[in-house]
Length: 167
Image (tube, rainbow, N blue to C red; front, top):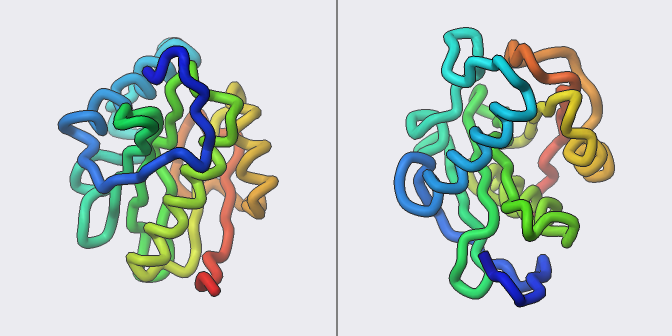
């Protein structure tokens, strides 16, 4: 994807998408495949896993975005309703060839903007012990550690951040 071209965070275009069809499905499946290898033996669709499918990542309470560079999908992520004022950021994924370029930070900001547009005041998220870069990103963006809020058995960090209105 975008081979031979330097993709920068400011060259991204985000579009509303679906997690179960088209580019959104392809990227979400790539994320699942990577997680399955990273956490061998994890049953991703087990009853004990937090849900983040079409029902959760679609309007009216949720959203799913795909980020494009030169018309090619390079990242995705979603917003899931937890309650009237709180959402959870889910399924953040950047294609491997585009990592380390600041795209994850821009994606996180786009997801926070989407959450604000849906009326949420607080964003939560989690990440596993083998995803230290993700945790570093979240903490650098103001997510503070909170107790387990979603029962994710592989998470090692649960974070929360107020979503101040954009100026």
